[in-house]
Length: 304
Image 1 (cartoon, one colour):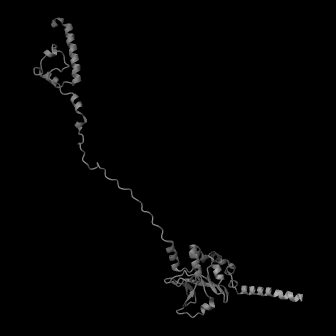
Image 2 (cartoon, one colour):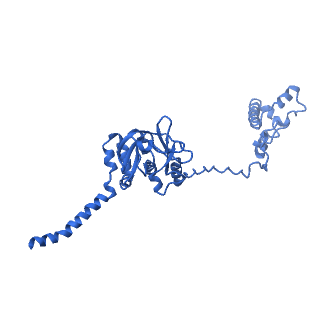
Image 3 (cartoon, one colour):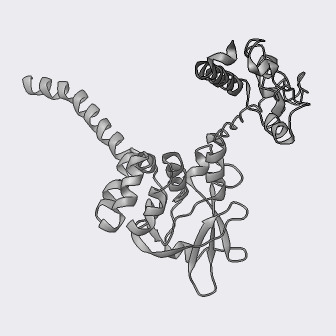
């Protein structure tokens, strides 16, 4: 009875455990792990890092059927140089929402050797103008080429080789170059906005014309004769006068009794014309007084 009780009490636990196991097996995350798959190939380490950094690896692992167009380290450098928001968009273009391997791509019935594939970027809701689609073309020489389905884009990324396939869950195919829809860069640039224009350099205001400039001066420019004022001109020595000056000898002096300029001989007139200035005349007068005094001393009788 004890054993039967134990068995009956353990039954609910076994049912719960079985349900959990079935749920884990049915979980989409258990289908594959893109990070682990690419981690086995060192040539795709940059591409694998970009998928992890942009959180696209988690979205890929939630899918059950997917195709990844992988880039080796050399080609992935072109994606690494893009801004972070553009990196995620471009990488999501390299994830096709279906399983494709070489057999399926080679056996596809295509119109004009071309087919349109839907990518993970289309499901993001950010794609416009066919940016979320790929054009796949199989050329006449058998080379498979991928490119953006956006108008004006060219298909230049060639399939290089098959990396990993797990039918019909995941397929990893190496392509030669990144697939960048032209509209992704233009949308990012328009969101960023053009840089503000540089402020115009303010030029210094032109100096206002002086009020006195161009105005005629009220007083004329001084001429050479204006440098001397009236007082100076009055004090300037003039030509010698005919008679003795106020500073000359007394009336009873010989100069007073002497002949006038009119009575003087011709040679005396020349001397008078060349008479010195007022200062010179003063000196001459003093000399004349001295001569008179000398004559008086020598000839006392003449004075009597």
